[in-house]
Image (cartoon, rainbow, N blue to C red; front, side):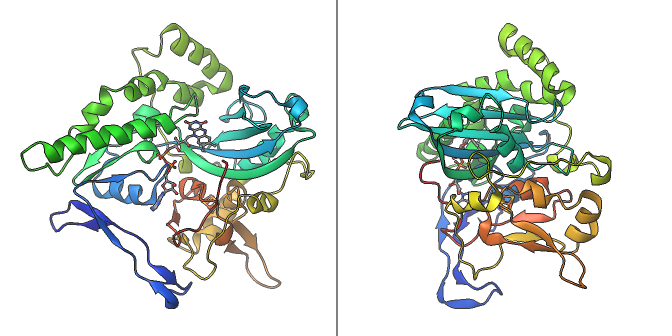
Length: 407
Ligand SMILES: Cc1cc2nc3c(=O)[nH]c(=O)nc-3n(C[C@H](O)[C@H](O)[C@H](O)COP(=O)(O)OP(=O)(O)OC[C@H]3O[C@@H](n4cnc5c(N)ncnc54)[C@H](O)[C@@H]3O)c2cc1C
Ligand code: SF4
């Protein structure tokens, strides 16, 4: 992040390339470039690392509900042509989650006998034994889903967090020198699991506000005050307003209550109920001690319909330069074992969908957390769910990460 002397955002600097794991410069070292702008728009997607810095520096989350999240695990399949029907859209809620844990699937049949199969788990879950990756694998074994996949072939795998807080959790959108757009702010429509249209539209609205400010004759203001009212009078606001009570209703009444409520609110009242339910807690505050929660016995993957994490990461085409500073940083390296392992059986071992975090114990040694950073698929779940917010995800060297050509 770059700032002017008066505190306004000046722009961003791209990361240095060719820095070794120990911080020294390799032969390939190239310093980053500074990019300056009258206004800088942050469109980093859900849980942006610079966005978090901006939110903290300018107090953008004051008065907003905590942002809440889900993790979406997604696979691309090539189906048996006899079981494929282009245009089929299936959304489910519940199983394999219990009725108090938010979860649901999406299946979209594409062209060429392909289909996206995905499962989203709300990151406000309370059982530290839960593994969103394994829940997705289990979902595929449902008697209504398995037959669709039989005879097919999994082609690709990915995982990414998504915002679930909705309208109540939006931060202030503007600050001196810039604006938050798309999922960096949190414009996703939760009941529909759709955010691309809102990301594009909010980028356009911010751009219009900037154009008017720069070409308006007078000196352009530091803060793009015209962007929030443009958003509030757009269809994005209307859409998020109607959807705002659906997700928090689940927190209040669980699956069946929320379904009933959703039908009443969205269908009968058209989303215009004269009340707004609040999100009271951040996701990292929700875990209960491992000893008090039921263990979950996940079935072994069969390598045909269900898979393990490492073979999944392999087909996400994830690659990182190995000799670079670890991009998964710990504020306090003692916490994973001293606190998380003791209390929660270190949930990072299970919530990470790429097997990045492992507790290892060499003979005669104390247990320690091993971070296999090169496997990271950049989903940001650890940054969100770590109980003490000790894990901070920072951008790795440019070009590193998953490579999803068709996801
Ligand atoms: C499993 C899943 C399924 C979904 N299905 C749908 C769907 O069917 N339809 C739909 O409309 N929406 C869907 N969404 C939501 C949709 O993906 C998002 O709403 C949308 O991508 C948000 O767009 P964005 O541009 O704000 O952020 P993103 O698409 O996340 O783009 C942000 C980009 O910025 C890059 N970036 C981030 N930080 C930095 C940095 N510091 N420096 C440089 N680059 C950076 C990221 O790598 C990324 O390329 C789904 C989301 C998930 C997780
Ligand atoms: S290390 Fe964190 S960001 Fe990377 S895949 Fe695992 S949970 Fe996601």
